[in-house]
Image 1 (tube, rainbow, N blue to C red):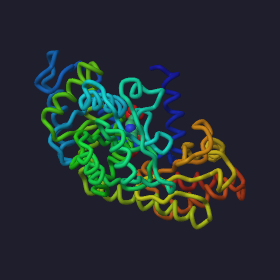
Image 2 (spheres, rainbow, N blue to C red; image 1 turned 90 degrees about the vertical axis):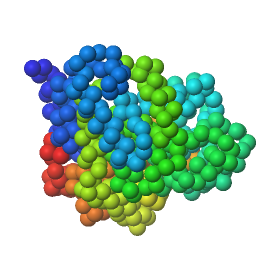
Image 3 (tube, rainbow, N blue to C red; image 1 turned 135 degrees about the vertical axis):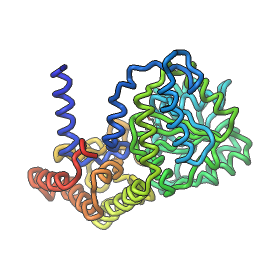
Image 4 (tube, rainbow, N blue to C red; image 1 turned 90 degrees about the horizontal axis):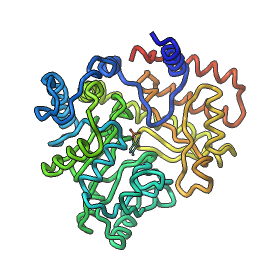
Length: 403
Ligand SMILES: *Cc1c(COP(=O)(O)O)cnc(C)c1O
């Protein structure tokens, strides 16, 4: 046994158990998902797709991957799925390749307003392979569909991209599809953050409108770390499959694909629907409590909201993130719409309730967390007292290894 590594895993287990995890992109996978991911399936090579492999001995993993595909299609009400992307970023790379085989112009959200690095950042492959142009949020931080239409008419993109990393409101995919039809371009949705809410029918389903939908499986969907691509178009799934293997990836991770299959089954259950509803209710309860304490916050329709720490507490996002870490509350600094500070500092935090709700955080707990954040960031409570409150909350919740 490798003591050095296993002791570190134990330390991380402890960190996860004693902390209040409010990073909006994180969650806790179930013990079944984790057992599949740690299984002997990691030993198997299976380049290709079910019944079309480049290796022998794939008769069992063929069945696992086919079950994962079928469940993904059932969960998101669509015809075709590729469950092999190693991450959301790989899924996006393959989706772009399938949609725009010869390159082209993509219209996506201004990155500082909530887009992901793979949506055209200078430091990502995306901006090197495609010509990105951007639409901003309005001054209140909402999507402005008329503005998207106006920019689309001027820029004539080949593809409009929706789906974001720090957008706290519902997205009208139907409306964006109408814009795509009006300017005659393709439509892609990256639902990485809100996939769990869509699975629970608590958000408009983009598979009804988009040519291709990509996702991660480890955020609100609560599965193993990985990616997913969906479409209703037979020609498109063939191009997507080729873009994943052999273009961008080699052998698929069958242990992770088994974990994804389990995650999709869990997400089809009534329990998961209740969970997703609780995530939204808890997020709203925390946000409303902060608002009533006169903090400057976005509103929220989903699993996250933005807290303007600069104007609420005279702390940059980075300072607030570090300060909350002192009392075992994990968040992440985030650019706010029209932020005046750099991405390294930022003016605020992104706060999400997908992870703590999995542990059993109640509506009352969510309000208590809001008060605690407010009191600590405004120096009305000592660290020791705050840590005690965090400890009481986390001890009431499920242990990470029992989820
Ligand atoms: C998290 C995220 C991704 C990327 O996921 P990774 O698995 O970290 O590569 C892509 N798009 C959006 C919108 C995301 O929020």
